[in-house]
Image (cartoon, rainbow, N blue to C red):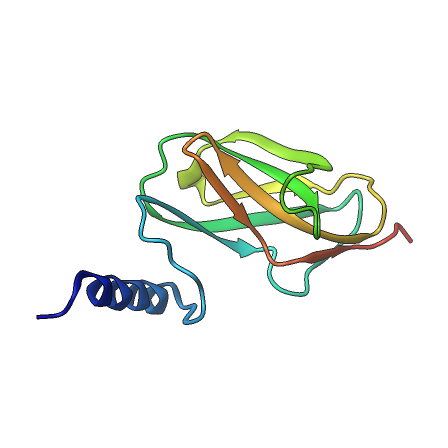
Length: 128
Protein backbone atom coordinates (compact mmCIF):
# COMPACT_ATOMS: atom_id res chain seq x y z
CA UNK A 1 0.00 0.00 0.00
CA UNK A 2 1.42 3.43 -0.96
CA UNK A 3 2.36 5.76 1.86
CA UNK A 4 0.43 8.97 2.50
CA UNK A 5 3.45 10.97 1.31
CA UNK A 6 3.67 9.11 -2.02
CA UNK A 7 -0.08 9.56 -2.51
CA UNK A 8 0.27 13.31 -1.85
CA UNK A 9 3.14 13.55 -4.35
CA UNK A 10 1.11 11.68 -6.97
CA UNK A 11 -1.84 14.03 -6.37
CA UNK A 12 0.44 17.08 -6.64
CA UNK A 13 1.80 15.80 -9.95
CA UNK A 14 -1.71 15.23 -11.27
CA UNK A 15 -2.72 18.77 -10.27
CA UNK A 16 0.36 20.20 -12.00
CA UNK A 17 -0.54 18.33 -15.20
CA UNK A 18 -4.08 19.66 -15.06
CA UNK A 19 -2.76 23.19 -14.59
CA UNK A 20 -0.47 22.76 -17.58
CA UNK A 21 2.62 23.55 -15.54
CA UNK A 22 4.57 20.34 -14.93
CA UNK A 23 7.23 22.22 -12.96
CA UNK A 24 4.90 24.37 -10.86
CA UNK A 25 4.90 23.85 -7.14
CA UNK A 26 1.56 22.74 -5.74
CA UNK A 27 0.88 23.17 -2.06
CA UNK A 28 -1.70 20.69 -0.87
CA UNK A 29 -3.82 23.20 0.98
CA UNK A 30 -7.37 24.46 0.50
CA UNK A 31 -6.25 27.79 -0.93
CA UNK A 32 -4.06 27.72 -4.03
CA UNK A 33 -3.53 30.47 -6.56
CA UNK A 34 -1.29 30.46 -9.63
CA UNK A 35 -0.59 33.76 -11.37
CA UNK A 36 -1.01 33.32 -15.16
CA UNK A 37 -0.27 36.93 -16.23
CA UNK A 38 2.05 38.69 -16.22
CA UNK A 39 4.07 35.84 -17.67
CA UNK A 40 7.81 35.30 -17.74
CA UNK A 41 9.55 38.13 -19.60
CA UNK A 42 6.69 40.64 -19.34
CA UNK A 43 7.54 44.31 -19.81
CA UNK A 44 5.30 47.05 -18.45
CA UNK A 45 5.45 50.81 -19.07
CA UNK A 46 4.03 53.32 -16.56
CA UNK A 47 0.62 54.65 -17.58
CA UNK A 48 -0.35 51.57 -19.60
CA UNK A 49 -3.18 49.20 -18.70
CA UNK A 50 -2.09 45.62 -17.98
CA UNK A 51 -3.98 42.44 -17.20
CA UNK A 52 -3.23 40.42 -14.08
CA UNK A 53 -4.77 36.94 -14.29
CA UNK A 54 -4.75 33.91 -12.02
CA UNK A 55 -6.06 30.40 -11.65
CA UNK A 56 -7.36 29.01 -8.38
CA UNK A 57 -7.78 25.54 -7.01
CA UNK A 58 -9.74 25.09 -3.85
CA UNK A 59 -11.78 27.80 -2.20
CA UNK A 60 -10.66 31.34 -1.50
CA UNK A 61 -13.01 32.91 0.99
CA UNK A 62 -11.67 36.46 1.06
CA UNK A 63 -11.20 39.14 -1.60
CA UNK A 64 -7.69 39.54 -3.00
CA UNK A 65 -5.46 42.59 -3.31
CA UNK A 66 -2.92 43.08 -6.10
CA UNK A 67 0.40 44.77 -5.29
CA UNK A 68 3.59 45.56 -7.17
CA UNK A 69 6.75 44.68 -5.21
CA UNK A 70 10.40 45.11 -6.15
CA UNK A 71 12.22 41.96 -7.21
CA UNK A 72 14.37 40.70 -4.37
CA UNK A 73 12.38 42.47 -1.66
CA UNK A 74 11.20 39.15 -0.28
CA UNK A 75 7.60 40.28 -0.63
CA UNK A 76 8.06 42.62 2.29
CA UNK A 77 7.91 46.02 0.58
CA UNK A 78 4.97 47.07 -1.57
CA UNK A 79 5.83 49.80 -4.08
CA UNK A 80 2.23 50.21 -5.28
CA UNK A 81 -1.21 48.79 -4.57
CA UNK A 82 -2.70 48.06 -8.00
CA UNK A 83 -6.17 46.81 -6.96
CA UNK A 84 -8.03 45.92 -3.75
CA UNK A 85 -11.07 43.90 -2.76
CA UNK A 86 -11.19 41.79 -5.94
CA UNK A 87 -13.39 38.68 -5.91
CA UNK A 88 -10.91 35.83 -6.46
CA UNK A 89 -13.37 34.04 -8.75
CA UNK A 90 -13.06 36.95 -11.23
CA UNK A 91 -9.72 35.34 -12.18
CA UNK A 92 -8.36 38.62 -13.59
CA UNK A 93 -8.19 42.38 -13.16
CA UNK A 94 -6.89 45.14 -15.41
CA UNK A 95 -4.63 47.65 -13.67
CA UNK A 96 -2.91 50.90 -14.58
CA UNK A 97 0.86 50.67 -14.21
CA UNK A 98 2.05 53.34 -11.75
CA UNK A 99 4.93 55.73 -12.35
CA UNK A 100 7.78 53.94 -10.57
CA UNK A 101 11.51 53.75 -11.21
CA UNK A 102 12.47 51.33 -13.99
CA UNK A 103 13.60 47.90 -12.85
CA UNK A 104 12.53 44.39 -11.93
CA UNK A 105 9.27 43.88 -10.04
CA UNK A 106 6.79 41.12 -9.24
CA UNK A 107 3.02 41.16 -8.89
CA UNK A 108 1.90 40.00 -5.45
CA UNK A 109 -1.64 38.73 -4.95
CA UNK A 110 -2.54 38.60 -1.29
CA UNK A 111 -5.59 38.05 0.90
CA UNK A 112 -6.63 37.50 4.51
CA UNK A 113 -6.94 33.71 3.92
CA UNK A 114 -3.77 34.01 4.29
CA UNK A 115 -2.43 33.90 0.76
CA UNK A 116 0.66 35.35 -0.91
CA UNK A 117 1.31 34.47 -4.56
CA UNK A 118 4.04 36.10 -6.63
CA UNK A 119 4.29 36.39 -10.41
CA UNK A 120 7.50 35.77 -12.32
CA UNK A 121 9.67 38.89 -12.50
CA UNK A 122 8.54 41.62 -14.89
CA UNK A 123 10.46 44.64 -16.15
CA UNK A 124 9.16 48.15 -15.63
CA UNK A 125 10.55 50.28 -18.47
CA UNK A 126 10.93 54.06 -18.59
CA UNK A 127 8.27 56.10 -20.33
CA UNK A 128 9.48 56.85 -23.85
